[in-house]
Image (cartoon, rainbow, N blue to C red; front, side):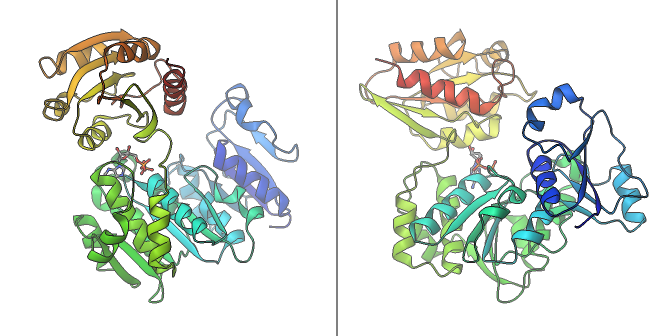
Length: 424
Ligand code: ADP
């Protein structure tokens, strides 16, 4: 990298991490973003002065550029990236840059449409409990480029990887690749399901016979992709991983699937059955995903703020048998709430709505269960406290984005947890 001219596109978390790493390796770094400096100010805090920042810029290719590193949000067919490739200039996703300095080493990479974060965190937890020095990152929390310094020769890496990063990877080569499922998502970027599947299946591109692919046998796309995978394959569910994953304490069939995938990945790394069982049993879950907050007067409170769409709320509802008080609402994303009706009936005794979407929710769910409009999350928590009875669950699983009232779903979930913990 010494004295190379490197352009990093996108000045968010992964772009800033890439810029810092490149600078440390001796490159001349330019960080480009279409946003203005003011919009970027928080992200740029702590960035070394030697990194040149070009705000308000959507064009970034010039003849003097030696390498381009792209953040996940930048479309792969951006005209400047096309131009760069035509000129033979390498274009890497941030994951590829991180890998050049972090790899090769014992690595598990997890991808899929749903369950990535949970499964990645589960694998990391089991490995640590089993005494393996482990670093967890990628899409979950910290970009790989920012982890390079924390990695010792014996460290195991567990990475959550998105289709965006896999699409352009060159040398990335995990020992264990986990492919959870594939459902329509991100089709705007990938065009078709086949394109989306192709991007994700790049996970296995460099894997060989001595590596292991963990695949969902109940998922048609996973089965289709499996045909081209050279690595040894473990399909889940299977009797061995089902037995080991039974110890998981998280709610829901979907989490049993995530646990079976995690179990298979840990077996592939040589972790003993007893350690896998113990690790899965002691995993407390990932924040904001059907996270247990507290029990008060026989009422259990759960934070599922990550459920920003109707599908995720459906998954959450299926994890409970009831009776529930369900908090719904936030910024409306455009799709109907009607698919929730059959899941609400028989499970939900009261719906509390918050945020902008409240009137649409009330209309779509008319007759499914009694409903009260609360406006704010604060009111909803108070109302739930007043109306819940022993044995009830109170579930925040909003089926909406958070941006009408919060910075993001994390902030929404934190406020819920804080207010619930303050209840008397
Ligand atoms: P990701 O990182 O892929 O977004 P998460 O682990 O954060 O996945 O889970 C997000 C949501 O996806 C969960 O709240 C749940 O609604 C749903 N989900 C999790 N695991 C699965 C699974 N194996 N199959 C289907 N849906 C799932």
